[in-house]
Amino acid sequence: MRINIDDETFIKYIHEHVLAPMPPLIYKFRRIDGEHLENIIRNQTLYFANPLGWNDPFDGQLRVDTKNTQAEVAKFLKANQPVMSRAKAREFGRRTIQFEREWHEIVNTNARERISKQGLCCFTGSWQPILQWSYYADGHKGVALGFDPLKDPSVFAMPLKVNYVKEYPFVNYVREPVACLSALLTAKSEVWAHEQEIRMWRSPPGLKTFESVALREVIFGARATEADMERVQSWCQESGLKHVEIFKAYTAKRSYTLERKPV
Image (cartoon, rainbow, N blue to C red):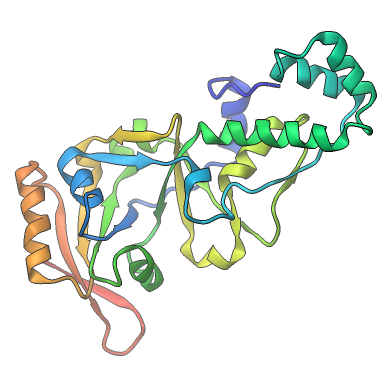
């Protein structure tokens, strides 16, 4: 019942059911103030966070189906509760209905422990969504960073397609642990469907260094100041990122869209 992310069955499931089709470039929105953007540019690092620690309390939520046979319960407990004796596991399996609340808590706790060891970094397939500029780029005063995933497969090899749904996924963790982990990593409320989010997955969570050639574009928001633009450009120059293309976004004249020009 334990999930081994190097297992061939697990990798096959992810490739067939979870991986997102990749656009030529993927984008990450960032504000200019603070250390995050400077670290990305100067140190070529991206932070892969544990989704249970995100500011959205709905991320990583799941309705776990705990309708299992006695044999399934006993096997699961022996694999995931090493301090529990075999006799106690068998007894627990026989009396699952009596211990239903405790069993539900054990399964939920185990599932959340699994997801706490996963790292996700969020991107989108376009630099133009005006809501993302408002949410994540300091009200159009920040930047959108364009990455080419093919330039560094070690970091960008596991793009997860986010599934936008009305309700928490309902999965039997004991019978389908891989599908359960997939649901935990990819399910999000349908109110966010406009973001078309792509989640890069690496384990464990933490800072991951990417190849500098993977960063292809820096796009300044429509409200970015000249001072901030000069500051970020100096970071690129000092970090040897001469290949990075620099753009400035601006509002279109006749529609609620963004356009851009080279700087």
